[in-house]
Length: 395
Image 1 (cartoon, rainbow, N blue to C red):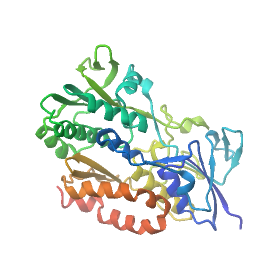
Image 2 (cartoon, rainbow, N blue to C red):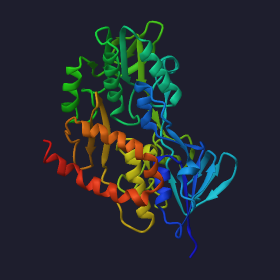
Image 3 (cartoon, helix red, strand yellow):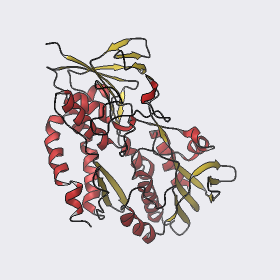
Protein backbone atom coordinates (compact mmCIF):
# COMPACT_ATOMS: atom_id res chain seq x y z
CA UNK A 1 0.00 0.00 0.00
CA UNK A 2 1.19 3.53 -0.73
CA UNK A 3 1.91 5.88 2.13
CA UNK A 4 -0.73 8.40 3.18
CA UNK A 5 0.26 11.93 2.23
CA UNK A 6 0.10 14.30 5.21
CA UNK A 7 0.69 18.02 4.72
CA UNK A 8 1.26 20.06 7.89
CA UNK A 9 1.15 23.85 7.54
CA UNK A 10 3.23 25.29 10.37
CA UNK A 11 6.46 24.08 11.93
CA UNK A 12 5.84 25.34 15.48
CA UNK A 13 5.18 23.21 18.54
CA UNK A 14 2.03 21.51 17.25
CA UNK A 15 3.23 20.96 13.69
CA UNK A 16 6.70 19.68 14.60
CA UNK A 17 5.46 17.35 17.35
CA UNK A 18 2.82 15.89 15.04
CA UNK A 19 5.31 15.35 12.21
CA UNK A 20 7.76 13.58 14.50
CA UNK A 21 5.04 11.35 15.96
CA UNK A 22 3.93 9.85 12.63
CA UNK A 23 5.62 6.56 11.58
CA UNK A 24 7.44 6.97 8.30
CA UNK A 25 6.53 3.51 7.01
CA UNK A 26 2.86 4.61 6.93
CA UNK A 27 3.01 8.33 6.16
CA UNK A 28 4.66 10.65 3.67
CA UNK A 29 4.91 13.80 5.81
CA UNK A 30 5.57 17.33 4.53
CA UNK A 31 5.88 20.37 6.79
CA UNK A 32 5.40 23.82 5.24
CA UNK A 33 6.40 27.05 6.96
CA UNK A 34 7.18 30.56 5.77
CA UNK A 35 9.96 30.88 8.34
CA UNK A 36 13.02 28.65 8.54
CA UNK A 37 12.88 28.94 12.34
CA UNK A 38 10.90 27.41 15.17
CA UNK A 39 10.57 29.80 18.13
CA UNK A 40 10.09 29.00 21.80
CA UNK A 41 7.65 31.87 22.36
CA UNK A 42 7.26 31.55 26.16
CA UNK A 43 10.87 32.70 26.55
CA UNK A 44 9.92 36.21 25.40
CA UNK A 45 8.77 36.74 29.01
CA UNK A 46 12.36 36.37 30.25
CA UNK A 47 13.80 38.44 27.43
CA UNK A 48 11.42 41.25 28.42
CA UNK A 49 11.74 41.15 32.22
CA UNK A 50 15.06 39.40 32.90
CA UNK A 51 17.10 40.58 29.92
CA UNK A 52 17.76 36.97 28.88
CA UNK A 53 20.06 36.45 25.90
CA UNK A 54 19.45 32.72 25.75
CA UNK A 55 18.78 31.57 22.16
CA UNK A 56 15.05 30.95 21.68
CA UNK A 57 14.92 29.66 18.13
CA UNK A 58 16.14 26.65 16.17
CA UNK A 59 15.98 25.76 12.50
CA UNK A 60 12.86 23.76 11.72
CA UNK A 61 14.86 21.34 9.57
CA UNK A 62 17.06 20.59 12.57
CA UNK A 63 14.06 19.68 14.75
CA UNK A 64 12.28 17.39 12.28
CA UNK A 65 13.05 13.70 11.91
CA UNK A 66 15.14 12.83 8.83
CA UNK A 67 12.14 11.26 7.07
CA UNK A 68 10.05 14.44 7.23
CA UNK A 69 10.14 16.77 4.23
CA UNK A 70 10.35 20.50 4.90
CA UNK A 71 9.36 23.24 2.46
CA UNK A 72 10.21 26.80 3.42
CA UNK A 73 7.34 28.71 1.89
CA UNK A 74 4.19 30.41 2.97
CA UNK A 75 0.90 28.73 2.11
CA UNK A 76 -1.19 31.04 -0.07
CA UNK A 77 -4.44 29.07 -0.02
CA UNK A 78 -6.10 25.82 0.95
CA UNK A 79 -8.85 24.10 -1.02
CA UNK A 80 -10.44 21.72 1.47
CA UNK A 81 -12.91 20.28 -1.02
CA UNK A 82 -10.23 19.29 -3.55
CA UNK A 83 -7.49 18.45 -1.01
CA UNK A 84 -4.98 20.98 -2.31
CA UNK A 85 -2.54 23.44 -0.74
CA UNK A 86 -1.22 26.20 -3.00
CA UNK A 87 2.08 27.66 -1.84
CA UNK A 88 3.15 31.28 -2.26
CA UNK A 89 5.59 30.20 -4.96
CA UNK A 90 2.73 28.63 -6.93
CA UNK A 91 3.54 25.02 -6.18
CA UNK A 92 0.54 22.78 -5.51
CA UNK A 93 0.61 20.09 -2.81
CA UNK A 94 -2.04 17.40 -2.87
CA UNK A 95 -2.79 15.52 0.31
CA UNK A 96 -4.72 12.68 1.89
CA UNK A 97 -4.74 14.46 5.24
CA UNK A 98 -4.14 18.12 6.06
CA UNK A 99 -3.20 19.67 9.40
CA UNK A 100 -3.17 23.44 9.86
CA UNK A 101 -0.91 24.56 12.70
CA UNK A 102 -0.19 28.17 11.78
CA UNK A 103 -0.63 29.66 15.25
CA UNK A 104 -2.03 33.13 15.88
CA UNK A 105 -0.65 36.65 15.37
CA UNK A 106 -0.94 40.01 17.13
CA UNK A 107 -3.53 42.42 15.70
CA UNK A 108 -2.17 45.85 16.64
CA UNK A 109 -4.56 47.85 14.50
CA UNK A 110 -7.60 46.68 16.45
CA UNK A 111 -6.77 49.30 19.11
CA UNK A 112 -6.17 52.91 18.11
CA UNK A 113 -2.64 53.97 19.06
CA UNK A 114 -1.46 50.45 19.90
CA UNK A 115 1.12 50.10 17.16
CA UNK A 116 2.75 53.38 18.19
CA UNK A 117 3.32 52.31 21.80
CA UNK A 118 4.66 48.90 20.75
CA UNK A 119 7.31 50.70 18.73
CA UNK A 120 8.20 52.76 21.81
CA UNK A 121 7.76 50.43 24.82
CA UNK A 122 7.66 46.97 23.21
CA UNK A 123 5.67 43.88 24.13
CA UNK A 124 6.42 40.23 24.86
CA UNK A 125 3.96 38.47 22.56
CA UNK A 126 5.44 39.12 19.13
CA UNK A 127 9.21 39.17 18.65
CA UNK A 128 12.58 39.23 20.37
CA UNK A 129 13.03 42.81 19.20
CA UNK A 130 9.84 43.95 20.91
CA UNK A 131 10.64 41.98 24.05
CA UNK A 132 14.03 43.71 24.25
CA UNK A 133 12.20 47.03 24.00
CA UNK A 134 10.31 46.09 27.18
CA UNK A 135 13.63 45.34 28.89
CA UNK A 136 14.94 48.74 27.80
CA UNK A 137 11.71 50.39 28.98
CA UNK A 138 11.81 49.03 32.53
CA UNK A 139 15.53 49.76 32.84
CA UNK A 140 14.99 53.40 31.88
CA UNK A 141 11.98 54.01 34.15
CA UNK A 142 13.09 55.46 37.48
CA UNK A 143 9.75 56.77 38.69
CA UNK A 144 6.11 57.05 37.66
CA UNK A 145 3.55 54.46 36.52
CA UNK A 146 4.39 51.25 34.70
CA UNK A 147 1.21 49.66 33.36
CA UNK A 148 0.38 46.38 31.68
CA UNK A 149 -3.04 46.16 30.03
CA UNK A 150 -4.84 43.27 28.35
CA UNK A 151 -5.92 44.53 24.95
CA UNK A 152 -8.57 41.88 24.34
CA UNK A 153 -9.21 38.19 23.78
CA UNK A 154 -7.83 35.89 22.64
CA UNK A 155 -4.08 36.05 23.21
CA UNK A 156 -1.27 33.52 23.61
CA UNK A 157 -0.70 32.07 27.08
CA UNK A 158 -3.41 33.17 29.56
CA UNK A 159 -0.99 33.53 32.54
CA UNK A 160 1.43 35.75 30.59
CA UNK A 161 -0.09 39.17 31.42
CA UNK A 162 0.14 38.54 35.15
CA UNK A 163 3.54 36.91 34.76
CA UNK A 164 4.75 40.20 33.27
CA UNK A 165 3.18 42.14 36.13
CA UNK A 166 4.81 39.97 38.79
CA UNK A 167 8.23 40.03 37.14
CA UNK A 168 8.04 43.80 36.60
CA UNK A 169 7.20 44.34 40.27
CA UNK A 170 10.12 42.10 41.26
CA UNK A 171 12.42 44.01 38.92
CA UNK A 172 11.59 47.45 40.33
CA UNK A 173 11.88 46.19 43.90
CA UNK A 174 15.26 44.60 43.18
CA UNK A 175 16.49 47.97 41.87
CA UNK A 176 15.29 49.82 44.97
CA UNK A 177 12.64 51.67 42.96
CA UNK A 178 9.46 50.06 44.23
CA UNK A 179 8.46 53.10 46.29
CA UNK A 180 8.94 55.31 43.21
CA UNK A 181 7.35 53.15 40.52
CA UNK A 182 3.64 52.36 40.62
CA UNK A 183 2.79 49.02 38.97
CA UNK A 184 -0.73 48.82 37.52
CA UNK A 185 -2.56 45.99 35.78
CA UNK A 186 -5.71 46.63 33.71
CA UNK A 187 -8.04 43.89 32.43
CA UNK A 188 -11.46 43.69 30.77
CA UNK A 189 -12.51 40.92 33.19
CA UNK A 190 -14.37 41.11 36.53
CA UNK A 191 -11.19 39.92 38.30
CA UNK A 192 -7.47 39.87 37.39
CA UNK A 193 -7.42 36.32 35.94
CA UNK A 194 -9.99 35.27 33.33
CA UNK A 195 -10.60 31.77 34.75
CA UNK A 196 -11.88 31.00 38.22
CA UNK A 197 -10.86 30.03 40.83
CA UNK A 198 -7.30 31.11 39.90
CA UNK A 199 -8.03 34.54 41.35
CA UNK A 200 -8.01 33.02 44.82
CA UNK A 201 -4.32 32.31 44.20
CA UNK A 202 -3.24 35.53 42.45
CA UNK A 203 -5.28 38.26 44.14
CA UNK A 204 -3.61 37.84 47.57
CA UNK A 205 -0.19 38.05 45.88
CA UNK A 206 -1.12 41.23 44.00
CA UNK A 207 -2.33 42.83 47.22
CA UNK A 208 0.69 41.69 49.24
CA UNK A 209 3.07 43.22 46.68
CA UNK A 210 1.12 46.44 46.32
CA UNK A 211 0.19 45.96 42.67
CA UNK A 212 -2.92 47.91 41.70
CA UNK A 213 -5.37 46.28 39.34
CA UNK A 214 -8.27 47.76 37.40
CA UNK A 215 -11.09 45.46 36.30
CA UNK A 216 -13.73 45.98 33.59
CA UNK A 217 -11.17 48.04 31.65
CA UNK A 218 -11.91 47.24 28.00
CA UNK A 219 -9.10 49.00 26.16
CA UNK A 220 -10.44 51.21 23.37
CA UNK A 221 -7.59 53.55 22.40
CA UNK A 222 -4.25 54.89 23.53
CA UNK A 223 -3.21 58.53 23.43
CA UNK A 224 0.58 58.47 23.68
CA UNK A 225 0.88 62.27 23.56
CA UNK A 226 -1.20 62.56 26.72
CA UNK A 227 0.12 59.20 27.99
CA UNK A 228 -3.38 57.92 28.66
CA UNK A 229 -5.05 54.57 27.91
CA UNK A 230 -8.81 54.94 27.51
CA UNK A 231 -11.36 52.19 28.05
CA UNK A 232 -14.69 51.67 26.33
CA UNK A 233 -16.23 52.27 29.74
CA UNK A 234 -14.80 55.79 29.67
CA UNK A 235 -12.09 55.26 32.28
CA UNK A 236 -8.61 56.71 31.77
CA UNK A 237 -5.36 55.12 32.90
CA UNK A 238 -2.42 57.51 33.04
CA UNK A 239 0.99 55.94 32.51
CA UNK A 240 4.65 56.72 32.05
CA UNK A 241 5.28 53.42 30.26
CA UNK A 242 2.64 51.03 28.90
CA UNK A 243 2.83 47.46 27.65
CA UNK A 244 -0.32 46.07 26.06
CA UNK A 245 -1.03 42.37 25.59
CA UNK A 246 -2.20 42.41 21.96
CA UNK A 247 -5.41 40.71 20.88
CA UNK A 248 -4.60 37.91 18.45
CA UNK A 249 -6.18 36.79 15.18
CA UNK A 250 -5.91 33.54 13.26
CA UNK A 251 -4.48 32.38 9.98
CA UNK A 252 -3.71 34.68 7.03
CA UNK A 253 -4.13 31.79 4.58
CA UNK A 254 -7.03 31.92 2.12
CA UNK A 255 -9.21 28.92 2.94
CA UNK A 256 -12.01 27.52 0.83
CA UNK A 257 -14.79 27.24 1.91
CA UNK A 258 -14.58 30.40 4.01
CA UNK A 259 -17.33 29.35 6.41
CA UNK A 260 -14.83 27.26 8.39
CA UNK A 261 -13.31 30.55 9.60
CA UNK A 262 -14.53 32.78 12.40
CA UNK A 263 -14.65 36.56 11.99
CA UNK A 264 -11.13 36.75 13.45
CA UNK A 265 -9.88 33.98 11.12
CA UNK A 266 -9.63 31.19 13.64
CA UNK A 267 -10.58 27.81 12.19
CA UNK A 268 -13.67 26.07 13.54
CA UNK A 269 -13.13 22.50 14.62
CA UNK A 270 -14.50 19.68 16.71
CA UNK A 271 -13.14 20.20 20.22
CA UNK A 272 -12.62 16.48 20.79
CA UNK A 273 -11.05 15.40 17.47
CA UNK A 274 -9.67 18.68 16.02
CA UNK A 275 -11.30 17.90 12.68
CA UNK A 276 -12.00 21.08 10.74
CA UNK A 277 -15.74 21.73 10.60
CA UNK A 278 -17.23 19.45 7.94
CA UNK A 279 -14.01 17.62 6.99
CA UNK A 280 -12.82 14.25 8.28
CA UNK A 281 -9.54 14.49 6.35
CA UNK A 282 -8.43 17.89 7.67
CA UNK A 283 -7.46 19.08 11.15
CA UNK A 284 -6.43 22.26 12.94
CA UNK A 285 -4.30 22.26 16.08
CA UNK A 286 -2.88 24.83 18.46
CA UNK A 287 -3.48 28.57 18.40
CA UNK A 288 -5.01 28.56 14.90
CA UNK A 289 -8.05 26.71 16.20
CA UNK A 290 -11.29 28.32 17.41
CA UNK A 291 -11.72 25.52 19.97
CA UNK A 292 -12.32 27.16 23.39
CA UNK A 293 -9.12 26.11 25.14
CA UNK A 294 -5.99 28.03 26.19
CA UNK A 295 -3.70 29.06 23.36
CA UNK A 296 -0.48 27.54 24.64
CA UNK A 297 2.27 25.23 23.48
CA UNK A 298 1.03 22.49 25.81
CA UNK A 299 -2.42 22.65 24.22
CA UNK A 300 -0.85 22.36 20.76
CA UNK A 301 1.28 19.45 22.00
CA UNK A 302 -1.69 17.51 23.37
CA UNK A 303 -3.80 18.16 20.29
CA UNK A 304 -0.94 17.06 18.03
CA UNK A 305 -0.69 13.80 19.94
CA UNK A 306 -4.42 13.17 19.54
CA UNK A 307 -4.32 13.88 15.80
CA UNK A 308 -1.28 11.60 15.37
CA UNK A 309 -3.17 8.76 17.02
CA UNK A 310 -6.33 9.42 15.01
CA UNK A 311 -4.36 9.34 11.76
CA UNK A 312 -3.13 5.91 12.81
CA UNK A 313 -6.68 4.64 13.28
CA UNK A 314 -7.21 5.14 17.02
CA UNK A 315 -10.31 6.80 18.45
CA UNK A 316 -8.24 9.31 20.44
CA UNK A 317 -9.98 12.40 21.84
CA UNK A 318 -9.00 15.64 23.54
CA UNK A 319 -10.24 16.27 27.06
CA UNK A 320 -9.51 20.02 26.98
CA UNK A 321 -6.53 19.72 29.30
CA UNK A 322 -4.62 22.87 30.15
CA UNK A 323 -1.31 22.82 31.95
CA UNK A 324 0.10 26.34 31.85
CA UNK A 325 3.22 27.08 33.94
CA UNK A 326 2.80 30.39 35.74
CA UNK A 327 5.78 32.43 37.01
CA UNK A 328 4.77 34.41 40.11
CA UNK A 329 8.13 36.14 40.60
CA UNK A 330 10.65 35.76 43.42
CA UNK A 331 11.33 32.13 42.46
CA UNK A 332 7.71 31.07 42.96
CA UNK A 333 5.34 29.52 40.48
CA UNK A 334 2.14 27.58 40.00
CA UNK A 335 0.31 25.84 37.15
CA UNK A 336 -3.06 26.55 35.56
CA UNK A 337 -4.54 23.07 35.29
CA UNK A 338 -8.05 22.25 34.08
CA UNK A 339 -10.01 20.27 31.48
CA UNK A 340 -13.44 20.28 29.88
CA UNK A 341 -15.02 18.76 32.99
CA UNK A 342 -13.04 20.48 35.74
CA UNK A 343 -12.39 24.16 36.49
CA UNK A 344 -8.91 25.47 37.23
CA UNK A 345 -7.25 23.85 40.23
CA UNK A 346 -6.20 26.19 43.05
CA UNK A 347 -2.60 25.01 43.02
CA UNK A 348 -0.70 27.04 45.66
CA UNK A 349 2.55 28.88 44.87
CA UNK A 350 5.73 26.85 45.25
CA UNK A 351 9.39 26.90 44.29
CA UNK A 352 8.94 23.46 42.75
CA UNK A 353 6.43 24.79 40.19
CA UNK A 354 8.80 27.60 39.23
CA UNK A 355 11.67 25.15 38.83
CA UNK A 356 9.45 22.83 36.76
CA UNK A 357 8.77 25.67 34.31
CA UNK A 358 12.49 26.32 33.84
CA UNK A 359 13.26 22.60 33.48
CA UNK A 360 10.58 22.32 30.80
CA UNK A 361 12.13 25.26 28.94
CA UNK A 362 15.59 23.67 29.11
CA UNK A 363 14.30 20.37 27.75
CA UNK A 364 11.96 21.86 25.14
CA UNK A 365 14.01 21.20 22.01
CA UNK A 366 14.58 17.55 22.93
CA UNK A 367 10.86 17.13 23.62
CA UNK A 368 10.10 18.33 20.09
CA UNK A 369 12.66 16.17 18.32
CA UNK A 370 12.46 12.94 20.33
CA UNK A 371 8.80 12.27 21.18
CA UNK A 372 9.48 8.55 21.47
CA UNK A 373 11.55 9.31 24.59
CA UNK A 374 9.33 11.98 26.09
CA UNK A 375 5.82 10.66 25.37
CA UNK A 376 5.89 8.10 28.20
CA UNK A 377 7.06 10.80 30.63
CA UNK A 378 4.30 13.17 29.55
CA UNK A 379 1.68 10.42 29.72
CA UNK A 380 2.67 9.63 33.29
CA UNK A 381 2.77 13.31 34.26
CA UNK A 382 -0.64 14.15 32.80
CA UNK A 383 -2.19 11.10 34.43
CA UNK A 384 -0.71 11.99 37.84
CA UNK A 385 -1.89 15.61 37.57
CA UNK A 386 -5.41 15.07 36.29
CA UNK A 387 -7.55 18.01 37.45
CA UNK A 388 -10.11 15.72 39.08
CA UNK A 389 -7.35 14.18 41.22
CA UNK A 390 -5.76 17.51 42.15
CA UNK A 391 -9.08 19.06 43.10
CA UNK A 392 -9.47 16.48 45.85
CA UNK A 393 -6.23 17.80 47.34
CA UNK A 394 -6.40 21.55 46.60
CA UNK A 395 -9.93 22.63 47.40
